[in-house]
Length: 129
Length: 235
Ligand SMILES: Nc1ncnc2c1ncn2[C@@H]1O[C@H](COP(=O)(O)OP(=O)(O)O)[C@@H](O)[C@H]1O
Ligand SMILES: [Mg+2]
Image 1: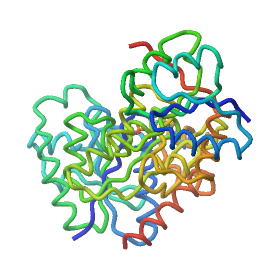
Image 2: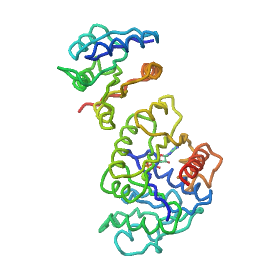
Image 3: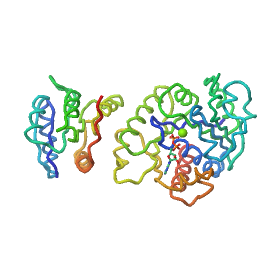
Image 4: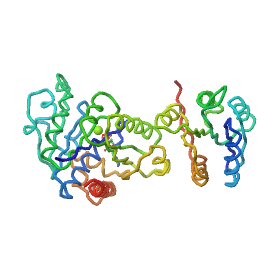
């Protein structure tokens, strides 16, 4: 069971994912844009972030770079959760040092299964660039 | 006309050469006329893996125009193979484009031609992939290797190659990324898993192919199973 921050500018998606994760016994925090995500990371200290890419303002890649470059946040596991699902998109997520890339749409059992695995796995070692 | 398969991966040390050698021996044991080509011209390892003295002509001589196909291909452990030279001097005056002719010629005589590519996506690796009909990706179950193999997959597909699937090598640690998630992100099937096995290194030290030296070892059995699956799915 973990504390999971769900970041997406689409309220419907946040709601849906929150329901799924709560059914799986997780505590869920919401953020609807990049700035709010950074706030919630500070105040809530989540174990895992499910991060959308395309958001107005700071996008998912910006957030990744910010969180993975700070000492106190770099060990939070971050999985990109996005509708951008081409191989090139996946490569970009991994190159930006996301811990994993999950393509939307995703079914409920698969999401819960992946989240359990991500919560169990140590975050990747972040390399400065 | 046979089929040529390039073993490729984005990352060095994933086990391409080891799997190429043993897979070749396994496929030939299954009754297919098999050739192995060492296309990793800057990091040749087939000679070491098969324990062949480097006094024989190598693929470098073909690529520099000083030998023909028949001069180079030699027999070992039931397969026929073209090893690479390990001498730095032999890297001079190579025309890597000739690899394509070399493989084309072999495909006329063999059922299966396995090509051991260099790591990464440099010109030699691209040439090896281009020269083959299909690609078999080899990765270890970690994020770096998976990321790099995904890049190799993208390039292979852009070159119009059939990607047969992914072989996961050195499997067996608690830190391994589970196979189902690797399949999910790679968008292709894991068609074989080969265990981390000390016997692989022991074989290398002794200069004998694992499948010949210790066919009952875990890794040898895994590779044999992979060979059976490949010939079943792509007869
Ligand atoms: N399944 C395995 N178990 C243990 N060691 C392995 C295994 N596969 C490969 N190795 C070792 O890993 C190293 C790299 O393997 P190699 O086949 O040369 O990789 P590549 O050709 O992809 O660079 C070698 O020392 C090899 O003996
Ligand atoms: Mg090699």
